[in-house]
Image 1 (cartoon, rainbow, N blue to C red):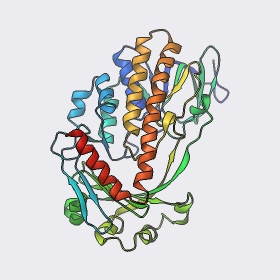
Image 2: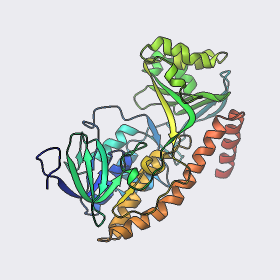
Image 3: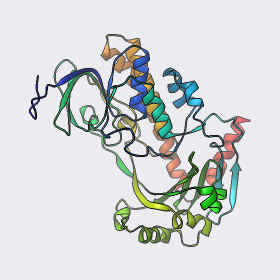
Image 4: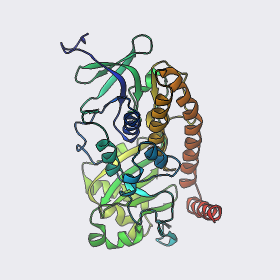
Length: 389
């Protein structure tokens, strides 16, 4: 069989996972340890083509459970960033309202996303991930089989197609017409490199882990990274076209535009933008509808952001993607030879789990960018401390 674009034959893969993020790789790993072959197709040219992002807190009941299912929990423990579970809450006047330090007893240890991805990649047989394969679409053939086409003109067929390809999934249209919508929050990302020596005031303010400063429907979220840098998300409740009004090719002018939203805030907070190293990176925050689900379609399903994209304000995205991958892999192994039974079992568990997390994420967004954000966060923290005591 050949495609219409070239003389190369269309190769068949029993299980095709579109997207080599944490969720897709976890699925491939769980299938591998169960003796089931899968192939991952990722749009990036290589695993080194870009930095994978900052720190992730890996939750005991989701991300850690997935790593246990993948047989990688002990290796994961070696990646934990000491002190990463610390939390500093600071108000716009620069007053520290809460400083929880990491005593090692928390159940959400922080790891570097890139190191976690490398752990999963290194656990797979050579050739499992096919790089430089940007999916452009998929169509159903017969009896649950699908064809996937790629930007380079090649195509594959598969008995089981898994869309693990993120917010703007090319596989989602096979099961759902839903599209991500703008949440009302825009980010501008910055970095402070070698923070302890080059930006000591920022390092002291942010602390060893996660940092939040919110007020008047905007603020700063920051992480102390494992490489000694501080990664800052400047968040603003704004119209969807706000970022388009800023020329991000002119870094100094862009800084002034963003800082204009923080007039009157403490200078140590403004320095998180003013003293940033390198370019400013804009990002709009999108989400799928809370409770997104679809009618079962033979031979195809979704996981991670492709299935339940939500805002990052509950810290659930990566954890859920990994748990999705683990649960789907386990369902396939448990229903050997019956793909439809496996997908049905997986989706029946997926939908209520993701709806609960998306509800929590949407609620956190409203809290963090509402009228009394700082007090709400302090009350929430006090409630969590009371529940844990």
